[in-house]
Image (spheres, rainbow, N blue to C red):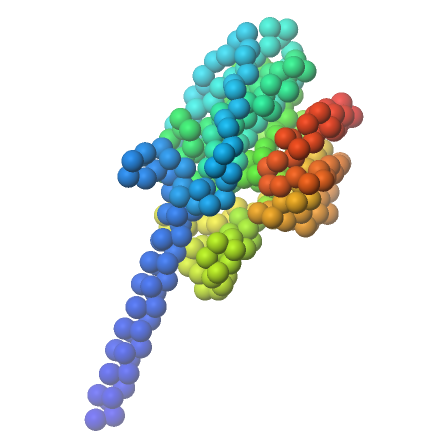
Length: 313
């Protein structure tokens, strides 16, 4: 009789655990697809559904800069994903290069204004489409994990074409997190400096905050479910997308840019990254700028600060 009761208790516990795990996976699966999966029923290349809630719907795509030598480049990532970028080369044949890295739910078209500023200073420019963005393949964004490796591959491609190349990485939002992680995790060929514009300390922390803002939901246990499922579905956990973990490993000069009115990625995240960085560094805070708006708000002052930094190293 006692044995039979114990057996029933074990079965009940197993069922409860199975239901809990099943519910946890379902919750994680929903939010991973909502935040990271590209495409919908009408457009297989549409950005993740969460972009509608986060980005300004009225933002216009910048006009692509005109260069005397524009070329599509292609590489294959280590996971087999085919990646696309556009190269803007100068006739003068200088060796200063910048890789401009777009943000979450964007693609290389949104780097147009940034590319124009560098081209006017006679820099060569490369604007990649990160995985699951634009013309590049892939179904899931990984918030900088796989993307940071892609940037290292693009830098190697530049050095193949131009062995004397000196390369700057300049990214905005997720692109900023990507360039920090690339410089901190990889030996990026020809790397001279990094410019990060409104990076998060970690995607996990940023998403946890947005869970409460957009859905009124607590961090625990939902973020734990998202973290596990993201690792299963994308081979990269949300918690792995953490510039804070690697910023201390960066050896080249770093410029930190942030708007003091940023509510998506609070300014304290820049301060944390800045404090943890051990290399030569500078900080540029733009009054009244929201997330990703520093260049638009500061205008010429933005570029004066950027090129003053680059000319000083």
